[in-house]
Image (tube, rainbow, N blue to C red; front, side):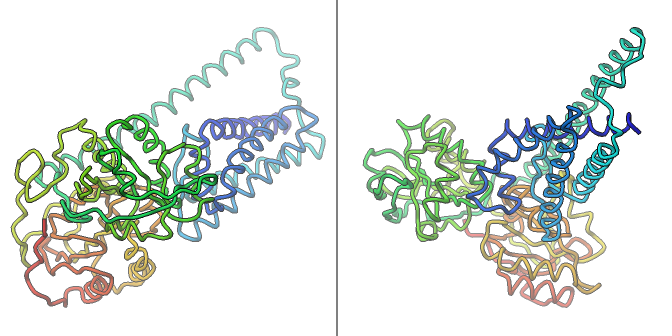
Length: 512
């Protein structure tokens, strides 16, 4: 049993060593994972340092013969802590990114993650038991008595196995990444082919309307200074206001880019981050990025004035103090807006008065849909990267729900919608959720039904949906069977009515 316990011991030591080193190399990802697992904000920074150090210490203690008992006990304690955190999140329906091996390998937790940690606990208990019985083998003791040729052969064989394992791991991840890229390309090609990829519903204040005035304190624990819209306009440059939240994962991921944009475009563009919450909470998230303008609203009063109903979102304000763009939602849309504001791309992203800024007309709004018309094509990637086609749902009524994980109205109806999804009658329509936002944000919603991602909301445009939450019923033949139900009560009424739903056969026109 000595050689078996030695192999198990070395495997556990290697696992903890790699985990500790990769976490230290990715401190931002480690802090994000800690927050996603439910730990308070104040604990994220110290735990992000102490946890990888503890893992590396366990790996070191498992090598020398004399410290194996302490190393195995440390491994058992850490693994039981991991198992508890994973179990609690799975029971609550959450699947955050584990960040187990930093940027080397990170994926949402699941039952395989729990099983892997349980197996490692079993191995650590076995090593501790062998040490207690005095059956442990020295790391180099097993090689005594081998001839020179046998030693060289084992050494070369080990190198070959390590190289083959590395190549296999690299090939696996390259193939998986290629699959994700191909899925996204298929989805984009489908949207472009349908002629609706460039169109998205207008959000925010009307172009040309006066930007709402505000006066907000700077996020600083030393300076007690307020900033107004007029303060930002003093340099007579365009202004981009970015609305954020310290508890928003995509917002945190965007912070390094915002800090870089502030530095790179300081001479042509004024960029201000408008967050909410306490000075302390924002300092933990934003302090390390050294931004010039970080303004704090008490709740969402300024965001509400600009009709920014989600985060991250941004709007362009001209040097004349008037709204110069619709609201850009999501990291990519904000990056596009920054490029537009700095003139690094043609300003064709911001429509006004029925035309783009380069003078071309907006895309024609699709003809008004009626009940009995074929449902628009819908072919998008789900949260696992698989392409989902609405046509594959034929044979049964489908409730197509349009969703936004950062929409407050969606968040309020989420528990009831999940309860309906779980207990719906056999004759109720099947559910397909079309959502914006990130994969992780949508995975945390916990839907059992398919969730497909449409960052541009192009499919909402095709169905004449102008906001979330909303729903449309598609019959078993793939034809429109209802008008657009907007808001939680109307969505649930449509869900519960199913094939007996009777409403106007005309859908509301999308206002551009």
